Length: 324
Ligand code: PBG
Image (cartoon, rainbow, N blue to C red; front, side, top):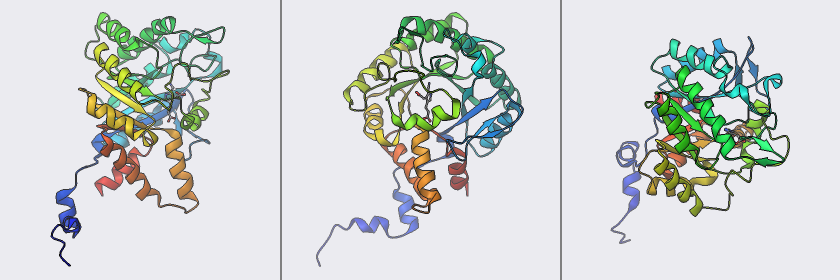
């Protein structure tokens, strides 16, 4: 047959495939999310098999293992004791709180580790929302004042990157101002730019006991139906001084990652969230899919869509495979 153009020539051997491969994953792309609590033991997280709420000591060890695998960064998510949760979320900026202590311990043991922190009130707020609540409404501007105190507190403890995940309007500019005013102009802001009101966060809220007590997050997190609006959020976050912009969740939002990669002048992060992780875990447990293969393909898809860095609960396993 006369078929002069045969794309299969570029797939004919492992060597040729390696030469023409367009996307490369590396452990250096990953940020490992870590859960912690203020207890001297480690608890397996029921809603997220394979994940653990660590004691401070184990957290430091776990981060060290990640670093040894070539993973440069971790992001911290605290489970806060119910007794410390208040309407005003004051614990979120307690300099002796769990997160500041964890940051100090991590930086002391591993100075080169990039420590990223979550800026939002949901673990601290008795309402379980990312912002302050009054008469059922999530307050924007009042919330930002607390977020600024929280971010400065985290920066003071040694955080390298603060990551506002609350989706309040104007918080990136306010955080930049507050950090600079406090002398933390070197602390970066990774903004959750396009964070969707997603059902894929369910297992995470189980892990932290941080589900909203009433209502949902639809007045601040984005509508999964919207695409153009993500570019609007991107333009605002860039203008407000975000150093990195994020899309979340990742797998079901590859078009958004691709849009941001096209329009952004800063790096794009993507968060493969708890529900995405769990769907692969669950399917693999029953033997329906090959866990390692599907995991790597899901991460490759996120990178190929345009993500420069990926927050994933699979970071350690994926790094092991990439280094093998
Ligand atoms: C909240 C926050 C959430 C996640 C990260 N930060 C949950 C939410 O917005 O309800 C979800 C992460 C995941 O599902 O893995 N500030």
